[in-house]
Length: 344
Image 1 (tube, rainbow, N blue to C red):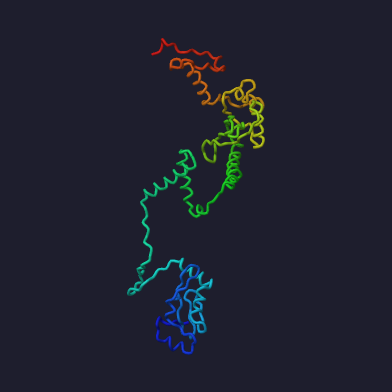
Image 2 (tube, helix red, strand yellow):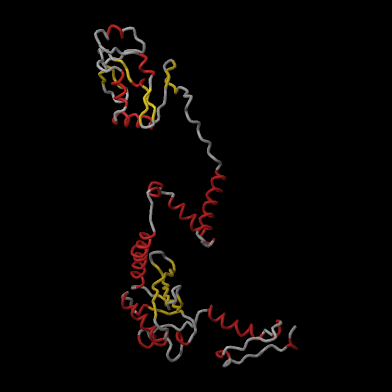
């Protein structure tokens, strides 16, 4: 359908016999639709009497009977409104021809390019965001480098990062039945075929329950290094050598771990753990692992036990007039307080 140029003199001859003839002034009017202002200049007159065409919908309009009212009704049609909004959302670049070269024409309403801040400023902004997150969530500052490494790893796949979402419930489920299970299965697969050592200690949880924490240490052929992983946290009713042995024995049975692969167990030096007659270590050696190495107690408890009597004995020389008496388990050991006359 051929279109007439604006203010073309051919309009009069084409519109002969039409009841409501097309007028160029119609194109200057506007219509309010859904809070948007639509201009009638989106119509073009075609070389057919009583008809115009919408340049947005490419739909011919018969105005010969009702005049410009037909154009206004078309402007309010949902299909026309939808296509108009889609056209407004798309970027439109006007071009002008100069000789044989097509160049972009200046646009008065074109947005100015946004200046990009220097890299040092962007880095400082990211640091402020990380520190703000740590402060708002009361996290230790030691996790700062870990958060940065995590952010750098996530940024390698921006599309996946944009779709990432996880609420508290799904995070708990995936951590328990996903991440935890995957790591535990990998650890069990390795320690069933290689020697390993355990580190056990009893503690009280936040809910005031007695829990036996079990760590496993072994040489990983996959990672080619020594690996220390959390193996289990066993809830206890009472803490005795027999209850601890039953808990560990049940753990080995459930996880199908061979006692022959157990090399040593690191624990504190209390009577329940390392008692020479009825301690946990002796029960394991007598009933399950006679080859178990004797590696003594852990150094942390040794240092604590050794520093306590030394500080008490030095009390009078440090200005404490009434030092607390020694604990009973230290009285069986000979102690020789320093002679003041021999001090340098």
